[in-house]
Amino acid sequence: QVQLVESGGGLVQAGGSLKLSCAASGTTVNINAWGWYRQVPGKQRELVAEIFSNGATKYGEAVEGRFTISSGNAKNTVQLQMNNLNPEDTAVYYCAGYKPPYEYWGQGTQVTVSS
Image (tube, rainbow, N blue to C red; front, side, top):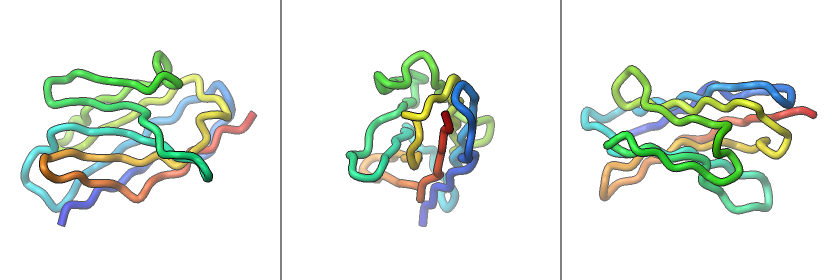
Protein backbone atom coordinates (compact mmCIF):
# COMPACT_ATOMS: atom_id res chain seq x y z
CA GLN A 1 0.00 0.00 0.00
CA VAL A 2 1.40 3.36 -1.05
CA GLN A 3 1.70 5.95 1.70
CA LEU A 4 2.74 9.58 1.42
CA VAL A 5 4.19 11.26 4.48
CA GLU A 6 4.69 15.01 4.71
CA SER A 7 7.15 16.71 7.02
CA GLY A 8 8.51 20.17 7.67
CA GLY A 9 5.42 22.05 8.74
CA GLY A 10 5.38 24.30 11.76
CA LEU A 11 5.09 27.83 13.05
CA VAL A 12 6.95 30.68 11.40
CA GLN A 13 6.79 34.44 11.51
CA ALA A 14 5.59 36.46 8.54
CA GLY A 15 8.40 36.93 6.06
CA GLY A 16 10.03 33.68 7.07
CA SER A 17 10.58 30.43 5.19
CA LEU A 18 9.73 26.78 5.57
CA LYS A 19 10.53 23.72 3.51
CA LEU A 20 8.06 20.89 3.25
CA SER A 21 9.02 17.40 2.18
CA CYS A 22 6.96 14.45 1.08
CA ALA A 23 8.05 10.87 0.65
CA ALA A 24 6.20 7.92 -0.80
CA SER A 25 6.67 4.46 0.60
CA GLY A 26 5.22 1.10 -0.33
CA THR A 27 5.89 1.34 -4.02
CA THR A 28 8.76 0.49 -6.32
CA VAL A 29 7.41 2.43 -9.29
CA ASN A 30 8.11 6.10 -9.90
CA ILE A 31 5.41 8.57 -9.09
CA ASN A 32 4.69 10.42 -12.36
CA ALA A 33 3.76 13.78 -10.97
CA TRP A 34 3.43 15.49 -7.61
CA GLY A 35 1.28 18.18 -6.19
CA TRP A 36 1.05 20.27 -3.07
CA TYR A 37 -2.35 21.52 -1.99
CA ARG A 38 -3.53 23.42 1.03
CA GLN A 39 -6.78 23.81 2.88
CA VAL A 40 -8.14 26.03 5.62
CA PRO A 41 -11.32 25.24 7.54
CA GLY A 42 -14.44 26.18 5.62
CA LYS A 43 -12.66 26.56 2.30
CA GLN A 44 -11.97 24.28 -0.61
CA ARG A 45 -8.62 22.64 -0.99
CA GLU A 46 -6.52 24.73 -3.37
CA LEU A 47 -3.58 23.96 -5.59
CA VAL A 48 -0.25 25.26 -4.38
CA ALA A 49 2.14 23.71 -6.88
CA GLU A 50 2.60 20.76 -9.20
CA ILE A 51 5.62 19.17 -10.81
CA PHE A 52 5.46 16.76 -13.72
CA SER A 53 7.74 13.99 -14.93
CA ASN A 54 9.26 16.27 -17.58
CA GLY A 55 10.20 18.80 -14.92
CA ALA A 56 7.47 21.28 -15.80
CA THR A 57 5.93 23.09 -12.87
CA LYS A 58 2.70 24.89 -12.18
CA TYR A 59 1.87 27.23 -9.30
CA GLY A 60 -1.21 28.63 -7.71
CA GLU A 61 -1.60 32.34 -8.25
CA ALA A 62 -1.30 33.10 -4.54
CA VAL A 63 2.16 31.55 -4.24
CA GLU A 64 3.72 32.26 -7.63
CA GLY A 65 7.18 33.71 -7.16
CA ARG A 66 7.41 32.77 -3.49
CA PHE A 67 7.16 28.98 -3.46
CA THR A 68 9.24 26.46 -5.37
CA ILE A 69 8.40 22.81 -5.93
CA SER A 70 11.18 20.37 -6.73
CA SER A 71 11.81 16.67 -6.94
CA GLY A 72 13.80 15.39 -4.02
CA ASN A 73 17.20 13.76 -4.38
CA ALA A 74 15.76 10.45 -3.21
CA LYS A 75 13.38 8.49 -5.39
CA ASN A 76 9.69 9.28 -4.90
CA THR A 77 10.22 12.41 -2.88
CA VAL A 78 9.19 16.00 -3.47
CA GLN A 79 9.82 19.25 -1.68
CA LEU A 80 8.18 22.63 -1.42
CA GLN A 81 10.32 25.61 -0.51
CA MET A 82 8.14 28.39 0.84
CA ASN A 83 9.63 31.86 1.14
CA ASN A 84 8.26 35.20 2.22
CA LEU A 85 5.40 33.54 4.03
CA ASN A 86 2.42 35.58 5.15
CA PRO A 87 -0.49 34.81 7.49
CA GLU A 88 -2.71 33.98 4.49
CA ASP A 89 -0.46 30.98 3.84
CA THR A 90 -1.62 29.40 7.10
CA ALA A 91 -3.23 26.07 6.21
CA VAL A 92 -2.87 22.33 6.28
CA TYR A 93 -0.62 21.39 3.38
CA TYR A 94 -1.18 18.10 1.61
CA CYS A 95 1.11 16.19 -0.70
CA ALA A 96 -0.37 14.30 -3.65
CA GLY A 97 1.30 11.78 -5.92
CA TYR A 98 -0.02 10.69 -9.28
CA LYS A 99 0.62 7.38 -10.96
CA PRO A 100 -2.31 6.98 -13.36
CA PRO A 101 -4.83 5.64 -12.78
CA TYR A 102 -3.93 6.05 -9.11
CA GLU A 103 -3.76 9.12 -6.94
CA TYR A 104 -2.22 9.12 -3.49
CA TRP A 105 -2.56 11.65 -0.67
CA GLY A 106 -0.68 12.35 2.51
CA GLN A 107 -2.28 13.14 5.85
CA GLY A 108 -1.24 16.78 5.76
CA THR A 109 1.08 18.99 7.74
CA GLN A 110 0.11 22.21 9.48
CA VAL A 111 1.79 25.46 8.48
CA THR A 112 1.05 28.46 10.65
CA VAL A 113 2.36 31.92 9.85
CA SER A 114 2.14 34.50 12.59
CA SER A 115 1.93 38.22 11.89
